Length: 133
Image (cartoon, rainbow, N blue to C red; front, side, top):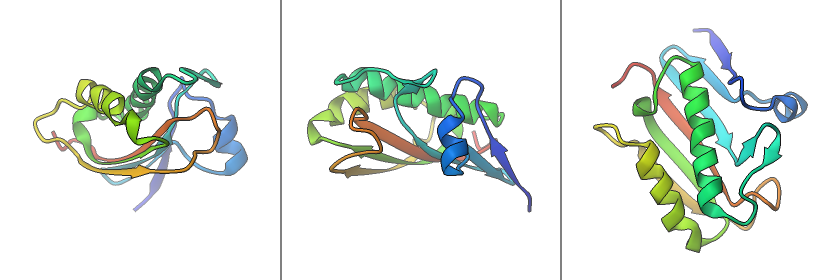
């Protein structure tokens, strides 16, 4: 089976190229999406604002899954990393807004000491089964 790199037009490729990763990799009908953070046009959005960051992260996830021809309803698994337990409510509020399909994906939540940049408060990776819903 051939792997295909998935990119989204609105996501900056500089880090992906520098650190040799793909935003998404599709193998058959399975799409694996790299951890998405609160970047828009190469800049961090929502510094110190978890609600703004969570929405941007879900927008980035949506961009990758749509670039592969899918939708947020196709997500079957998410892994969420937050830097503070107090962020859980805001992250869940965004999750409920973006993930509204008939079968919600599995979810793992991990509280971490930090992410790739100190400004990042949340990162989410996902797996989608394209055409599943």
